[in-house]
Image (cartoon, rainbow, N blue to C red; front, side):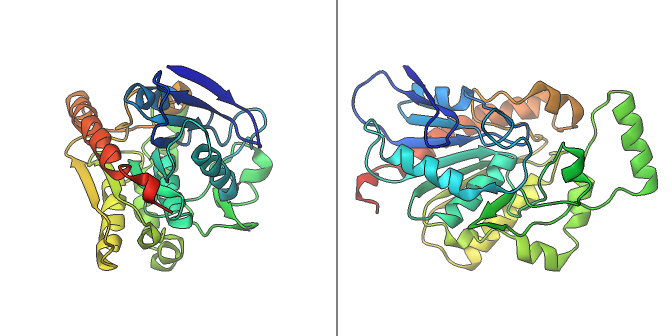
Length: 305
């Protein structure tokens, strides 16, 4: 296997290529709200015969520190770069993301349908949610979008504000170094129909197969509900491309591509849900399905625009 750091054109990532010299179908992998660069999923995909680019988009030198108004054009540039790599087959690129990266994968598929040949979202969202800021000046200026397009912020839904008792519980958990569940904040925010409508990702614009994976006991956000929202929207528009939702009972938020390793500081602070048995089953069962989906979706991509 070939591992190639990528630091050109403003991109920060790592390209993994199978040892064989023939061009391969390409996959772009996107991590979640922990930031930084997670290479494990891309490395595993390369071991399965794909050319895979692990892309960082915030939290590293040369990239934004905050998950706030990241230009979608950055990801477009990565997809174009990958499409034109000499070891990549002609055709479109599959995008695989988990958690916030799953939200992003759907958004990229809808924004760049001519370039994205398949979308896989692990614990994704069908709605754009507010960005994540650590800088006090950014945070106290009010919530902002995580994404930007053509110089403007992508519409987003702000999280519901915790009630007094909820804030006390969350503060106590933080002080006692116990994980916090944020699911209720998302579920209450979904009641704002106008905001949700404005920030819903237009998945019907995706011109490729879509595979979504969720656990019903996701305690970070209700990814099963989000996945159902995306599938329902695709079906309402009668899109001619395959779409599937793998729903795992009792599993939590950490269903992810094989090899993916989230930031420990992030997982330690948040309650992610799921029993060990349900989480293990979801990850073991979903991975071969994802590989089969990608192989089927990227066949004959040389004929794609």
